Length: 479
Image (tube, rainbow, N blue to C red; front, side, top):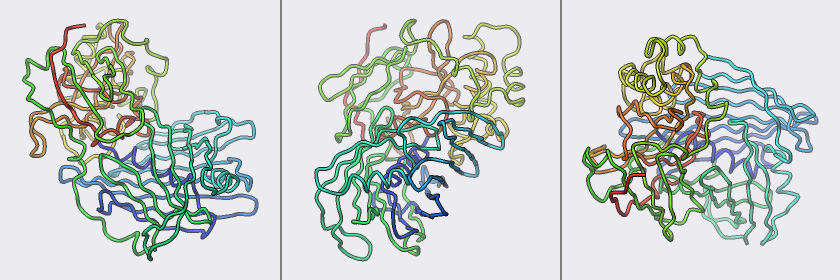
C-alpha cells in the first residue's frame, strides 16, 4: 500500500481550486520534506466560447528502495460561464494505465467510458447540483474577491472518481513569501477540502491575478510543497528519499503470535492537529474517544450486527474489481470449485491468492484485479483487489479495507505497524476480514478506511499516516 493516488487527487483538487487566469501555462515543482519528487503543468486555453483546462502531474516516490512513478492528467472542458461540458482523465502508475472520457449533458446526465488495464466499461452518473470544474472554480474565486476575511464554500468536482468535494476557502491578509525569483507579496488563502474520513487542509499563496504561486500541506507527516517556477526548475531531476519510512507507526512493545489471536486495545493520538479524524467502526473494530486520543479495540472475529449488511454495489464488478471478466471468473472457479459455504470459500480464495501471486514486491504501483490476474505480481493492494474480485465472482459481497498491520521487522525498523490492505467479505451475517498478503487476519490490523477498490477513494485514511502515535497496547475483553 502506498499514498500516491491519494496524493495526486489532493494536489489536483487544491491547485484547481485557484486555476490561473494568466499566464496561460504554469509550471510547478513538487517537493516532499524538501526533496523534489515531481512537477505539475497547468494549461488554460480559450477556444471560441469554451475554456479547456488541463492539469498534468508527474511524481516519483521512493519506498523501500523502489521508486514508484505516477503520471496523472485531467482535462476539463467548460463554457465561458463555467458550465461543465466534458472531461478526460489519464493516470499511469508503474506502467498500469487507466483513462476515462465523459460528457455532461444539459440535464446533468454524465456519460462515461472508462478503461483500466485495457478493459473498457461504460457507466452513467449525475452531475451534483452546484458542482464546479476548474473554470467554474476560477470564476467563483474572482466573484468572491480577495478581501481579507472573505470565506466561502464551493463544490469541487473531480472527474477521476466522479465525485464532488466541499471546499472551504478563507482569504487572509497578504504576506511576504519566498518563492522562486525572490520574495513577493502574496495573498494567503487557507483551504479545507472535506474528503471522506479526513479533511485536507492546505495553505496557498496567490497573486492578485488569482494565480497560485505556492501551496503547502502535510502528507505522511512530511511537508508537501508546490511552487510555481520556470520549466527548467520544474523538470529538474527528482531527489531520492524513502517516504514509506515516514508512514510507519512504532509499537510500544512487541506483539507475539498469541497476542494477535485475542482482542487488543490500541491508544492512538495524532502528533499534530489534523482536523476531525474518524476511524471506521467495523464488526471487528470499535473506536472510542478518550480526550484527544482514540481508543481502537480490534478482535480477530467479527461480531454479528456490528455493521449494516452489504449494498448491491458490494457484489457488482467495477473498474478495479472486474469480477465479471472471463479470466477472473475462471480463476474463481479454479480456486474454489463446487458448492461451498461462504466462509469455506473465502478461506480457499485467500489461500489461492497467496500462492497465485508469485512475484511479491513493491515494484507495482497500483494494479486492478484483472491486471494482477494476468501479471501475478504485486504487494498487499494487488492481493486485496484480486481476492475481492474473486469473492464477488463467486457471489460473495466484498470490500477493501486499508490501514495498518503489525510486523516485527520492516526495512530495518522493529516492532512497527506498516501501511496495509486486506479484504472484508460478508460471511455468516457479518463483515469478516481476510488477508491474502499475510495469510491471515488478526488483531494486529487497524482499519483506517473501507472502500471499493477505486484508488481515488482507496486511501481515505492516508492523511493520518506519518502523523499517528501509538501510545499503548493492552489486552481487551472479547466482544
